[in-house]
Image (cartoon, rainbow, N blue to C red; front, top):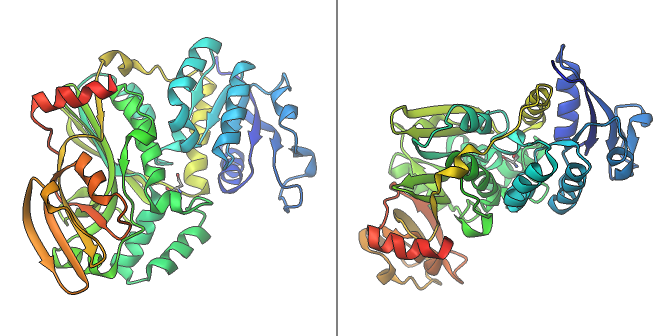
Length: 409
Ligand code: HSE
């Protein structure tokens, strides 16, 4: 039998209001918002004042509230609220990717200890039901790769820059006005946000808890007109792509801008849309696409989690038994484009091979094969370098892999 849910909502920003609206417009859902905890009492609200409180305890200590929905911005405060709710035996739904990614192993254990579900579909690619799919449909060990566009704001900016000739700064402002960007937009631009989402996907796709700080990322904040010109000359767009791949029993993960050719599924994924490409040994390639940011797309994913709780759904993390090893980012060879200015000193010796090289008085670039670990060295202390992935990842030879994997096992 379906349960009746009384919700305690933390946060009433873009996603909170989106959830309220989709909940009102969804007949048949057996859930209602009882109380909403907010930070700013001065803000004008569209709902009666009786809904709102400034005190978390009013929700956490209310025995009638059986589900806490956490939709605030601050990841630290979100962690405190979510763990307090779980300890009190309340089910939790959250869309806070940073908080989930940084504490996932502990949150997994708390679910076991307190016997409560924690669902977070809205934290990853908003309207694309990727986590539920990874849990239920791909619940075997035949998945080999998950990659895609996991950040709506940067995809919106790149679309405007590449397809409409809008300036980077104007495109960022539009993404902010549309409510796609984080309060601190450097989380989007520098690739942190898609990295948090990748860290969560790694647990559900391959059964490994990899804290975000172990995953290599670079973003689009250093993208220049020169890079856009080179991409167009190559007939490509640039997209910010999150990747994870399993080679043998070793899992790799990284986030990097990528040259995307017209024959790629990602080429036509525009604006705030996200996309996920799954590769399985027998199912081969599958492609999911949907809005990845904004109040309604994220609100709809949160609603779907709430609905799932009415029939006692919980993640089972079945793939934790696969015993995969994590290379997160320290090995694996990639072909990359590295653009630098005359102020940079590039250690060309870090490349295994170089296919293309250009230098003018102001700017230079090189395209070559390099290990992910060496990319970190190449970038260290050189803020003007921009990196774009050109070719797919290949594993190192098996002996190197074993030695490097030891760091993480
Ligand atoms: N800032 C995020 C994005 C919001 O642009 O994708 C959705 O997680």
